[in-house]
Image 1 (cartoon, rainbow, N blue to C red):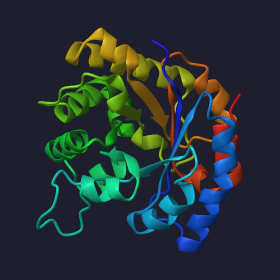
Image 2 (cartoon, one colour):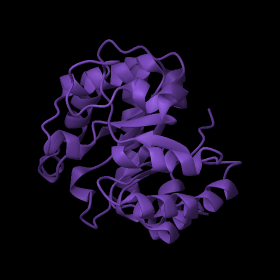
Image 3 (cartoon, helix red, strand yellow):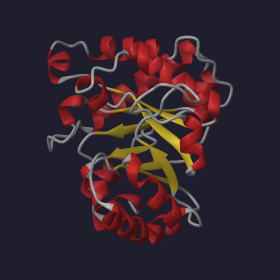
Length: 252
């Protein structure tokens, strides 16, 4: 099954409204140029979503959120419901990012709830998985990833592979300047696709997009995207620079 590449930018807790508006404007031409064969998503911080939504509403850029609550409404201080995000024009939501897991102690049970809530309300979740450097050095990469994936997908049913996206983000490569080799990334993506086949079925596994995230740069894109099981990237720092992210979008 042919999978449409996705280039996703996670803006994290950066930019003010003026800079966010300008960055969104600057990315529209690059996204439009690749509209025939590639999806582009940007995920601003929550306070910037209204501003960025206004800028990209008539473009091909997909608006995403950096997190999402499982509940429609209620006493959940600091959270944002799927309905609120949908009202702002969001179509995707990042869930289980390593910074949420390690800085804010979000565990597998909470990530499963967020994933379930997103799917129930029609948001496409980008489920992030990844091992620490210590886990990789101890040859525990596959064990860690299997635990994260199986836990996140407890009681989750997927009929359409387009409704779920997986992002492999080795924790040791995020914001460090280090990047997994294309061989390492492909090996993990193959493992994850096989595991998805075990959890669901081979048809779902062959259709689900699996992204790579971890210090992605324009110069690493061609090699990453040449690999059969790498269906796109989740970009952090380089997504904050219009020139760099446009080059990533326009990889050859």
